[in-house]
Image (cartoon, rainbow, N blue to C red; front, side, top):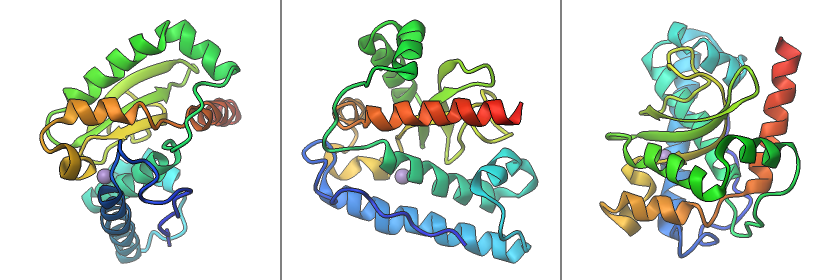
Length: 208
Ligand code: MN
């Protein structure tokens, strides 16, 4: 059984960048919905007790309900963690070095990532991920897919993601997805992203 993770900040903490009502509905309705439907789908198939990462890595074998709701469960769990009302910029360390080696400046990354998010047609996500060689890459996926899934083209471990489904921004931004993407950059928890990078590298070295 998967359970809805608690947020580490209040629903209004990210205002004015992400409004309280959007956060509340997104967490208590959308994320809760994916969680419930994932549990139901796993129960129906007798597939309880598998970790979410294992499920996603072999998602092609699990069917559409588990692909959509397992992705929804995992993606939102990551999303809440990489948001913060008290962003402190990027801490120095392995991640920062790799980030600068890959993208040069934050501004260059922002353009790259924002473009992936803005040009995702319909609903989906844009990601910063670590590939099998420990390299960083930007990609986007439709619906609730993510780079962990065996069904996606560009595979890796996501360490930062933006939800560009309309439910993530429509109340406050309506059709202005680029404004929402811009606001997202003001509430990124770079310390967490940096930690996610270290964990992704460690996990990779254990499995190879
Ligand atoms: Mn969402």
